[in-house]
Image 1 (cartoon, rainbow, N blue to C red):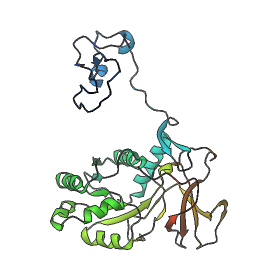
Image 2 (image 1 turned 180 degrees about the horizontal axis):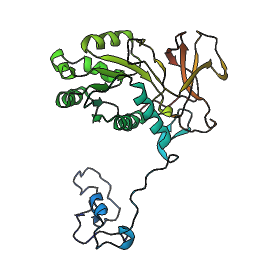
Image 3 (image 1 turned 135 degrees about the horizontal axis):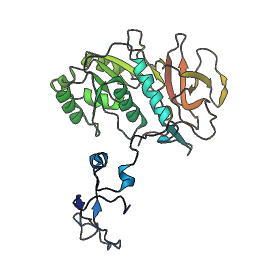
Image 4 (image 1 turned 120 degrees about the vertical axis):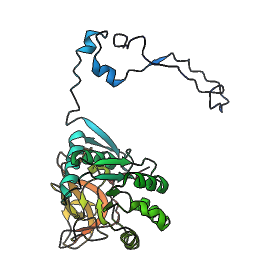
Length: 313
């Protein structure tokens, strides 16, 4: 660290101590931690310029390297206490699946408004897919209706990605406020109940794409086609290179009879690794589902599968 320190004229940030004498001054206990010295901050652009005053080891550093496909990108916790490792190859595969699912030609300068937090694997994959598609992504971290409508009014997005709960909050706003969403032509969300779906389609002149994907599958598994063949209220069909099975609940190796309900199992390149699942094996979602003769999967309710993904915090 001492060898790679920046030049003396670099910015210095004074250390701050928390405690009764701090700026927030609210604790009765005395802060026993030692005071920290100044913190040196190096801007990335300074490293990229490689000024001649820096040590040779820093000037000759290879900055072109990146993450390997098998490096861990996201860690997903599950209800049974295990952790799913989403690697970079899983995230990139999921992003390509999203791009391949969009059959319609993209507008000249597409803009996407996302209310999905980046703490969720879906949010990370969504931004990656937007980069692949050449779309501009507008993020609303707090996800509130006021911030979402303000961002929509400013950026005029063509695609809106939001959860059913966020959409219901948007629909509760007055009609004159919802005019900010007039440019939205596609809404991507989870399967909706009939009442919410009707209200959304009546309020927005946009196509609603309902999809489903557990966090252990990078949030991508099933989706309705962005065409007139969609089935409202269902999770849709499997995305490219993904397979789905409906197994007898509690017996993942046995498939149910056609048209019967069972636990939804998934397999694909976007699914991460977790203990007990062999490489390329099936992922137990813990959800009860039924698949119709046309291949569309309808989610019924949470099952008793111990491998179900943990709910978002």
